[in-house]
Length: 268
Image (tube, rainbow, N blue to C red; front, side, top):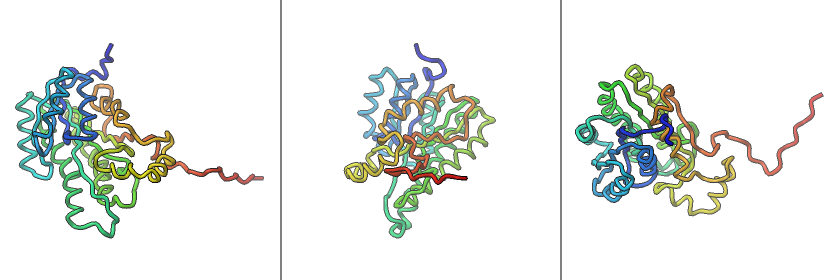
């Protein structure tokens, strides 16, 4: 029997960036919880095989084109999304990108690409969808952040700036829109293998180094995020807003890693 706190039957969820990667896992989890879906990608045709998969789960799904770097594209998508279902109950702000470089090598264009996509794009998508949630007095917005929302890593300066911005943006929007019955939270995955970082996971030495720093001793698997996304999209989280939920195997604990723990001096 489905727990009504986590039941999304009859609700409409919009998930951006669903042509591949974690966005598809978010969409599957929401569909299995009962939500109908609006899926976006820069090229609508890239979504068609995934649309078939969602419909096979018994849910309705429509594909829409969206380039989050273009204001007119965001506005057109929001209008089409509302016209398709009459309302949008849930937004998962997932579309993003990364350029992995040492800070000394980051270009002006690298910076603009990452910040315009991950941070500016997320804000204006949220703004357009919130305008459509306000008249209904209800909404769940989940901004996708990262462990880099709270930790810094070499080679990820613009990306970390964008994800840290997502955390701050989430808190501001939560305060802005709470009076309209809209919750805004940030789901922050730790180290998960995606198309963006696949090359890292091909390096066994790097994976061993990473796993040594994760208390649960493994990188994240995509289904590890299923419960968190449904929780933040559902009535189960109705009194939670402005928060960042880290799903990271514990790497953000910053725990010490030593083969032999140092002896603690006696205190007399």
